[in-house]
Amino acid sequence: MNTLNITLIGYGNVGATFAQHLLMHTKQRITLNIIEPADKRNGALLDTLHFIGLTNHTIVSNDKEAFENADYVFHTAGIGKKITSSRMALATENTKLTEQIFSTVHFKKKPIVIVTTNPVDIITQKCIDLIGKQTNTVLGTGTLLDTLRLQYILSQQSNTNYADCKALVLGEHGETAVPIFSMCKIKDKPYSNTANNVNLTEEVLNAAKKVKETQSATYYAISACMYYLFCAFESTEETIVPVSIPLNSSYKKRLNINKDLCMSLPVKIANKQLTVINDFLLTDDEITNLKKSASYIASNI
Image (cartoon, rainbow, N blue to C red):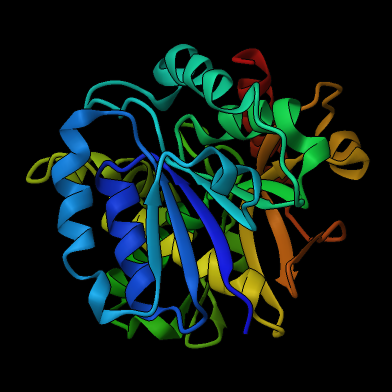
């Protein structure tokens, strides 16, 4: 079995938690290249190296050759969102950092690039502008996390097992995220409590704030999303999931957008390939809200 070369950019809470998922649960041999210039993360890297003997993997750090030979690149580096600010407030600084990281890289393979750095839709588009032609695909985790949050909230409010609830959120990973209530189900029955839609939407949008009341940042769930997407690309079985990707011509027409931008749409992933689902059924209200979400992203690029 060939060794997978994976570069992880950023070793804060998100990056370090994802690395633990990757190293402890992946059977295929991995060389993990951790790019993290901040000395304050040396302890986290050393802590990780202390358990590497339990695995068959290898860790290197700040290795340019390993970066250029990556099969996967995970971009988590950037300043984090404060509890009182929006993700868009991070755009200028995290865009500059992304340019510094990717402007001079020349990939020898065509890696799959997965972005979590916020604002994830803006940073995913910036990565596409910088390295898109060198890659297999570039995507952001987008509203996958929002979808899981909505699924959890539905299960709690309906007193139903989590696995028996289905949810979907599209659009921006942020203030204009759009819950697709027409696709939500509880025990295979369509979700029908439409009077509660506004409250559910607010609860999804405020989920990160709730976590930060007792924790410095959100990182367990987003790290799990990263590993879930990695497994989806490695699998031969098809996974349908919302992720942040470029609007294609079909969705640009549907959402009345002329600008190149990324936002979360439903896609199929399997065998290291991603396919956009263009004929996804949405209500008129959902289309209207997605148009607003796309316009908001466009205004911040």
